Length: 165
Image (tube, rainbow, N blue to C red; front, side, top):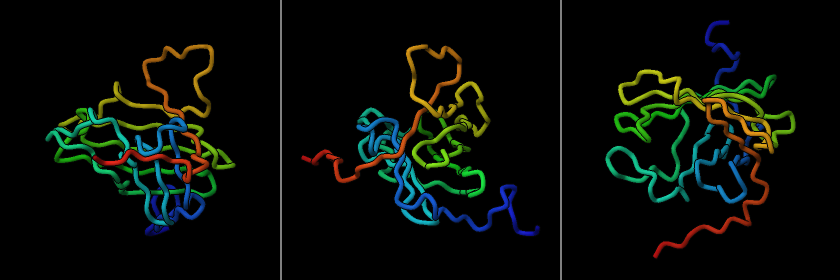
């Protein structure tokens, strides 16, 4: 139908995700954590990112880096969005394109990928990431593609943010 994207969602409605934060570990709040504050806004938080994480101009990444071009399909719980660093780069990347699926219970990201684009805007599949629905187990995954494991952050009140000097 005219005006609909390929996920059949227009405009974006993130209602099922409102108030949720996804982290790579319980201590990683604000270290590339994914935040869904309302039905139309999502961002990656770098509020507690390591000091060595720097953009190409030497500045720290912003506390909130917003997704653009977001799409969400409630029937498959699939989220898509872009993080655009241009004209700067972050880790020699100008853009990241996210495509991932949430568990039925929304307690974790079960699958998906981040497509990485280099400084010139060219896709660089050798630097892509895959989302894994379970943490690394006793067997090691030696595939060339780094695996990410994100789970729902359950207690925002327990976050102890660093105090600026």
